[in-house]
Length: 148
Image (cartoon, rainbow, N blue to C red):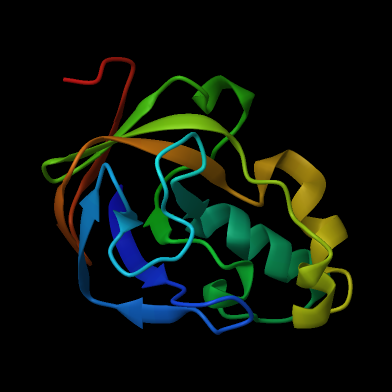
């Protein structure tokens, strides 16, 4: 598994900004992201495979940034059994706290996107930051039942 992309949103109704590296903290999630406050939805993570499933269902290619997630990971599929597991990205540890439910804003990105994301946890997962640190695109990702 690999961290393929990193993004943040610096204001409401603003586009996601993709970056090559970021500091992820226990206080603000992905640096500069307006939604990274402490809590169960501090960082959002999207599976590349599940995003591709969504695009295939819609018959189009849509940038992962349309989903407005913070991290894109290749080589994983999320589901109900993911809750309570830990994502280790370099020194950073994220606890998976739940499913990221798609909102009506997805329809503004592409017609049918909201409904396509509801299936099989395609909208990704929400996470709480357990251990902060720097992440870089291309870093290996490990899923574990234990935080250490």
